[in-house]
Image (cartoon, rainbow over the protein chains, first blue to last red):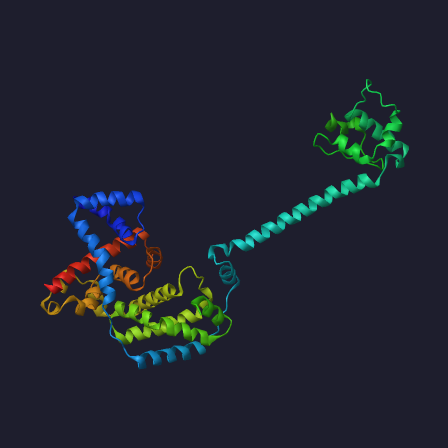
Length: 211
Length: 175
């Protein structure tokens, strides 16, 4: 077997002994081992040597040594500053996933921003709904009614073939403003209805958006 | 009480709980360091410095590995720092050891078990540390690679070399 092929199997051999080789790598390695005496010997050594090494005891310095060393360490740490967990460390400890530690504040900030955005949007939407529900067509003055009449005529031309049994003004005043707003905004656009008559003249381009 | 609980208590101000951690890991750490440095006094110094450093940096321990593995890494760093500082001549000689030096007549007198420390010490430094961390520190290759600043594959290849070289030297010692 060529040395090049053996070199490529070194890491795989270690994985194989540790039980960490994938099925495909194990099959490939076993095929190589069938042809290579050197790698078979290496496999035996990788399996046996750690056990043999751990069987060899080191000189025991004795109980007195262990005790004195513990006392020395104890004295040293009592003169050292008290360690304290940082916020990042606390988060990592808390969630037991250190990589999340820096992500949590980011996620919390993003969530807060999202919540604020949703809240602001809801306020705006609620403002329109409140404005619509608190006002009624019958409370509008003549100028505003004329403007509204023109606006409804543009966005919802009256179908002459359908008889409602009501006159235009009667029909208008019977509808709540929210229905009119919903009618005019049905295409997804926003229609601004200026109740105090300060809106620009529809003829100067304001109704371009409605066509 | 497990290590994590003792660490939390220590961080909360109960220093006596760190004493329990010391007692629990003292011997294993000593054995690990002794196999690296082969000197009882130096081993004792490194072990003591390791525990003190672990205490002062305990807040940085994030349980990505076991407390024992973390201690081994600190000890290894401590060993490296001292080695850099001292640059003792015998260390250089050990790092540059070869198979020939192991095969010298005085090393063949006894079986390999009596020479194990010398055999390991004669491995090139990278192979020695990887082997020591793996066999005596029971560290996964991923952590070894991080500690050594090498790829995981390189750590495995170094380990492979170390084992085969040791095996060869052991056979020669027994011959």
